[in-house]
Length: 63
Image 1 (cartoon, rainbow, N blue to C red):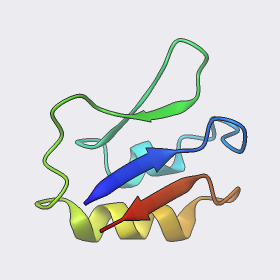
Image 2 (image 1 turned 45 degrees about the vertical axis):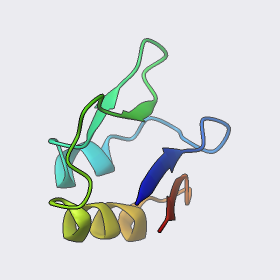
Image 3 (image 1 turned 90 degrees about the horizontal axis):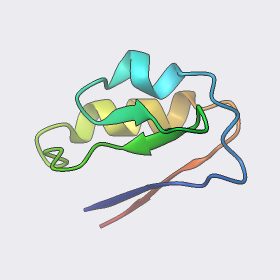
Image 4 (image 1 turned 180 degrees about the vertical axis):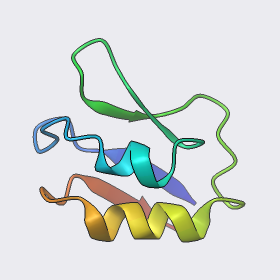
């Protein structure tokens, strides 16, 4: 599984970080990014919830 945050769409609202803090964090531009070394398979449910909750549709998943 691959998870990507589209920086052009992300507005830095933090919804994904609230839902899946073990996967997402803010970068230096206050936009979301995937944490280095995050266990994506273990957090699949939370990632999918974060994707569905993102107001800008900035989270992209690929199996």
